[in-house]
Image 1 (cartoon, rainbow over the protein chains, first blue to last red):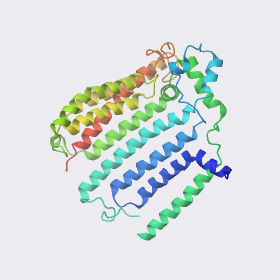
Image 2 (image 1 turned 180 degrees about the horizontal axis):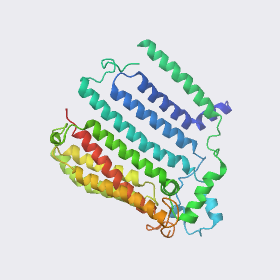
Image 3 (image 1 turned 90 degrees about the vertical axis):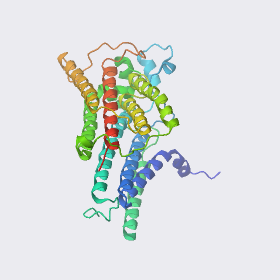
Image 4 (image 1 turned 45 degrees about the vertical axis):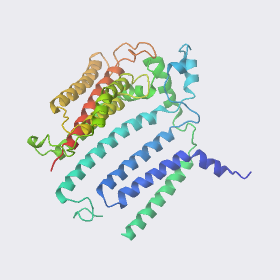
Length: 137
Length: 233
């Protein structure tokens, strides 16, 4: 078979590739689209891409969620060795906690941007950037 | 017009190629952060704090001050949206969406509304045991109110009640932080007994803070939806 190392890497790294594609799509929407609603949607998609990238950076192969649920712990006594054994198969919890913050901040940004869009629409009766003066690049 | 599109696409292509190349150099699926950080959180949380959900423990206990700032940012976003869309109180009550839903929609949403509120409360009360927490539960509660506001044209929530709930929840969060300080530690120091792993009443201050955050986020998001729906020219 003709599987090279590169092919396998593509499959393994598909999380990164997907996240980068989502980031690119979001940036494209934010930079090129004329409608202000579409610009805000682009920003939101850009946000999601960054969150996906951070989560996939924290992934560890065949790791589980970092939760010591009763089904996982069973009747094991909670000694240091047992916990170390359980936590070896868990993904990194730090990026997940960071992404939880990032989602909330992204939500706030989207809400404020949309309310500004509503105000602009009420003032100019249009959402097209080209027709709103002083708002072109 | 065409020029701009080509420019943006070439810029994004360069950016994407460099980002991909940089990320391909990382070992995907292997631990490439500093070895000790992840292990410290994963061992300390069940051993000392007796909390099952490590992400919750990081967000509320280890980085509790950061979460207070996050809640403040959300509050600021709500205030900013209200001040941008504010047009005078007397105009409130007239809805941008003026038609009511059909009988099926109204009856169905009246049936579903308590169940959605219950699910949201479950998610934020069990934040330290299962996936979820204050932010997620608050958002679920706000979706319940969104359903009611969309189904009924004359459904209204009281802004006064919302701000009272929001303020009380915020005061609870800050008071718990100050109590930790009085107890002889730093701000947001854990001062309650920890209990045992996977009990509902365990984890010290984490359940109390997450319940406060759940109420706060639910009230803020409901107020935000209500402001946006009642926006009028």
